[in-house]
Image 1 (tube, one colour):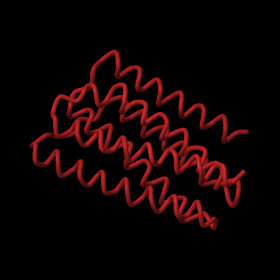
Image 2 (cartoon, one colour):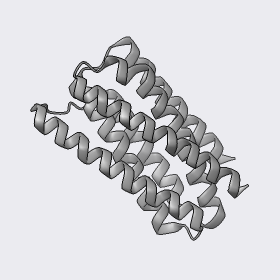
Image 3 (cartoon, helix red, strand yellow):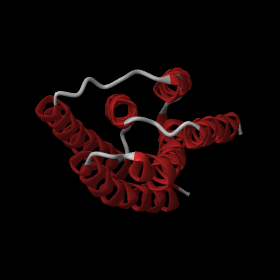
Image 4 (cartoon, one colour):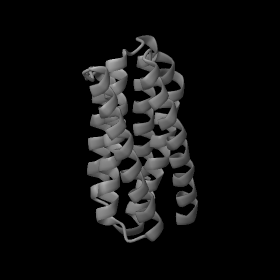
Length: 173
């Protein structure tokens, strides 16, 4: 139950962060920072999962998250370097990082099936919120066509992650 409540709290924080962005349209440097932060958070979560899980489906999912999010972040870094843009820290990135740190602390205290379920449930909730923020705020706000294209490609990939996480969650029940 505590894990479920924490996942809901994380989802609410992400939703609130996305809504605050809607009021103040983020700039491309802020969008780049938010997108990179969101990817780095999932890489860290995957690394934790790989260190704790013994479930082959959870392990395969975590490997995929680590590989895919590292690859997208590498493309994002290459793009900001090419555009000579410095990603700009902002309240949304800070809120994401704070929520992720709290979730990592919570997850690190769990083991076995409890960890696996909490990790996958969080991944489902996290991808829903990030995908929603990409669709409704980040992509529409991006002014640079290359950044917008990278975000659109990321959205398609992350929608697949959400479906994969949902499938693994069904298998864990």
